[in-house]
Amino acid sequence: MPPPTPLDLLPSTRRLLLLGIKERGEATAEQLSRASYLSIAAVRMHLYALEADGFVKHTRRRDGPGRPTHVYRLTPLGEELFPQGYAGISVALLAAIDAHPECKPRVFDILAAQEEERARAGITASTVEGRIAEVAAGKEREGFFPKCEAVAEDEWLIVLRHCPIIRVVRDHPEFCEVERRAILAGTGASLVEVVGSRARGALHCSFRVRTEATPRESGAEAAGG
Image (cartoon, rainbow, N blue to C red; front, side):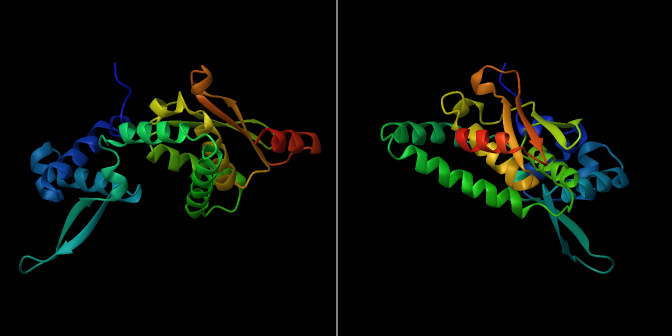
């Protein structure tokens, strides 16, 4: 059975509305209400949530007298919920990189730096707990199906229960380090460790997040990173 796509992980009603917009290119709440047999109020409620998550956006269109109509379209993030052809291209590119191993560390370092910048850009919370929640929300939108829990004082566990890039991660576990660096940048924690990786046979990818680290732990991280 193929792994679920990011779209599959959404609630069924919101998935239905996204499919309705995708089929039409753009749609109003009234059009989606008729197609889904849901009330307009229910459709609007779900559209507000989808817009808050960054999957859709609306423009106002005035077709005549009265209030303007809101017309919804998918955002680039919403488009990425649907199957993409990146996996095959990624495998080919990584195979080319493998043919020149002297380039591989530099390529992954650039990729990690870009992910760090992207992770920091989406964070607004002032506390570690808030930043962890925002990082998890970002991973949810990307289809990683995350779960976060506090396991001790100043220590949390982030578990990614789905890996949308598992096809390339199995042969290139360097992507786990890219994720670790992105989580570290986004949370602003003192230390983030990979404690489980699907690339190494674990059921899920897991990261331990700490707000304080002892000199021994910091040294170990520097040696392993």
